[in-house]
Figure 1 (cartoon, rainbow, N blue to C red):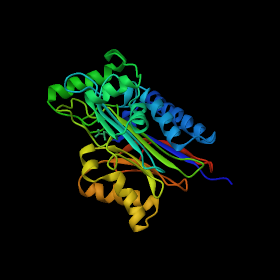
Figure 2 (cartoon, rainbow, N blue to C red):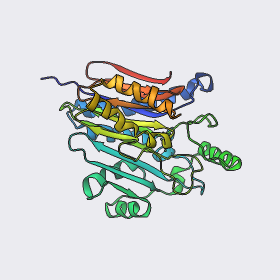
Figure 3 (cartoon, helix red, strand yellow):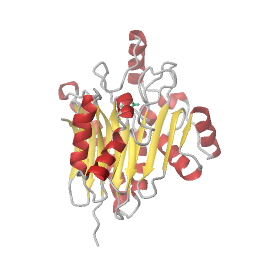
Length: 310
Ligand code: ASP
């Protein structure tokens, strides 16, 4: 029996205008998105799990300097990089998350280790770092995460005394947070989200990305969701879980549930951003209320799409 499978990815949502983008830059983003999408899709095609596919796609995005996650993470107030990530599997409802970690090349891989190798769900800061060491992770120098444009962003935010969302109107031309959701050939869904958070953040600020239910969620009964946007609002809106709840309790379709949450409930509390979602039938939804969202999707029924603007 041919069961449908599909994958979707995002590289952040925000005020992304075509006129701000050179052709070269647009091509670089599209190429990076398409590489990640295809790596994840190939895994699904080979019969691998949704969990493997989203991890591969997310790692590919984390390794690109273009997105605010892994290598491309923004600077904190102290000039460091503190990353957050989470992963969740829809069959078992197992999940893993890390927040405020530094030096780890692929935070999503550490989140998966938390899920599979620890008895916990969420590890932060020093404790997460110690766990990573125990798991044999190697640590990158600050130099690995250095990016001239990110540095300039931080300097401006420092001067202005603001904590800046990567996709806020004040921002420069780099946008952030990455994520992937997939439905595999066995109708299992999974979700991953990874971010460097906000430029110039302090006090150990953590956004929605590593919070299961807020920025990331997966449940075989309903859907898998990965979010990007103004994290504080996504936390208060419990956005990813809200999409799942509308499907489970109200019987909405994936598309209707995503639309309701992103275009109504989130807008009502003044949250901006978007999300990607799949359901166990392989349906995909890419929904956002901002000018744009770096996004892509590919399904076994032959639909393929990479987009940036509305
Ligand atoms: N949601 C992320 C955060 O608040 C930021 C983003 O999606 O760009 O940390």
